[in-house]
Structure formats: C-alpha cells, structure tokens
Length: 360
Image (cartoon, rainbow, N blue to C red; front, side, top):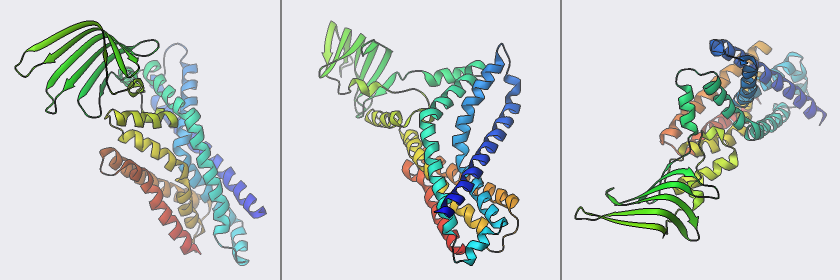
C-alpha cells in the first residue's frame, strides 16, 4: 500500500504539472494568433473571460495527453533514481507501477468528464459566443446567431407530416403554425395554417385555422374555423429541440435530444457520437497510459525525462490520429457511432496490454 500511494502521488503530481503546461502553451499560442482581433472598449476583461472559459475546454480536450506525459515522466523518474531496478531485483513486475498509475488515470479521466459536464459545456458555449459577438471575425457573428436559432422545421417519424412552428407561447404551444401532410410520393395533400397551436389532452388545439385539402382532380377545398382540435401524434416535448452543438449540451440534455430527434426522424449520428465519445474520453487515458508505461520501462531504453516527453508526444499523436479517423467514419455513417467512439479505446487497450506483457 505504501508503494501504491507513493507511485500514485508521483503520477498525479506529474499529470497535473503536464496538464498545466499543455494548457498554458495552447492558450499562449492562441492568444498570439488572435491578438489582432482583441480591440474595443474593455477588451482586457473580455479576453480574460474568454481564456478563463477556454482553459476549461482545453483542459478537458488535452487531459489524455497530460495523462500520457504524467505516466511517462513518473515511470522515467523511478527508473532514473534506480527505484525501478530495486523493484525488479525483489521480483516485482511492471504491474506494481502500472496499477497505481492506472488508478490515477481512471480517477483523473472520470473527474475531467464530470467537470466537463458541469462546467465545460457551458464554458465552450460562452467562449464561442465571446469570439463571435465580442471579437467578431468575418461572418462568425452570423454563424453563431444561426446556430443558436430555435428549431422551426420538424418532420414526423413516418414522414407524412411536416411542421413549421414559429414563436413559443407562454404555458406551451406556438404562435403561428403550419402543418403539411404529404403523400408517400411526397406530393402535398393537405395544408393547415393556424395563428396559434396549443397542446390539449390527446392532441392539439389550433386557433384561426385555415385547412386546405388538395384533391386528386387539382382543386382545393378550404375550411376555416375559429378553433379546431387535431389529433397529431407528436406530443409537445417532441418539438423541444435545443439549439447548439452536441458538445455544448450536458449529458442528460444530450440523451434527451437523441430520443426526441430519433422520434422526429432527425439526424442523430453526431449526437450519439458525442455521447459515446464522452464515455470513451473518461477511459481512453487508461490504455494510452499502458502504452506510455511500456515504452518508458522497456529494456535497454536510454534517456529519461526528455525521452519520456518524446514518447508521450508520439503516443498522443497516434491516439489523436486514431480518434480523428474514427470520428470521421462515425459522422459519415460508415460505422455506428458507438463503434467509432470506442474503437480507439479497444485498439490502444490491445496494444497496451501486449506492450506491458513484453516488458514482463
């Protein structure tokens, strides 16, 4: 237990130091690259807020690299002080070092995942908002405004109804609604326009209704009513689509949006990929750390801290490359989102276990 705490403490200290260094370098380079856009009254406070939010986002994104650096530096330090040699001389293998370092990787990964869910998603949204509205560059303000616009067009799962809903009403419902019914050949069969659309038991109540039915002979039958009840299958919560990127939604909201969008026939691949990706991100440091440890403890290795940093950078590049390829394949639909998110974890788990086995 003493050895476990000693190694875990060294790994944790090295990981926190590596994370602080990586975040500081990234933010410094980003500041230099964007310094020309930081103008206007009170730009200093706005920049501080921007980089305070960015630091949380960058810390979450670079946590696996920090874990790799921390594990490699801790293992190399034990080797440099001959403590690893002493452990081997009494018959202790690499797992006596790997176990506490992996425990730190697991706790660190889960902690960063929780921090991202409670703080990071809001920080990512706020950082993007500041860059788009306070420090405008090109059409960034228009793109950000378009991204934050509430969803107005919906389609039923069977594809027979298309809804165009305007502003939301207090207490539920919409101010202005158009419902289109189409045939299997996607020809317009019916159009319902209303000044208001409110949910009632078992359906919807529409006010100031104009109901047009397009008959096969080309004529149109028009019916008007002050109020009319329609039994649309979609409940009010089916139209509760949250604007923004999947990465800017908390896990509970993200899960709910996947269910709602699937019921409405919306695209959900990017939302499912984000949900699976957050689970994989919490654990991806474990197999990556195994690879870094195997490289740091391999027989005949020369160099210590400098070699550990180079090895960790190489493993990080391989990890990010695998994640990038898997992400692209998941978004394109070539593989299921769950497979795309977890494939790098499985790949590095196999590589890490095989590498540690060779060290033994």
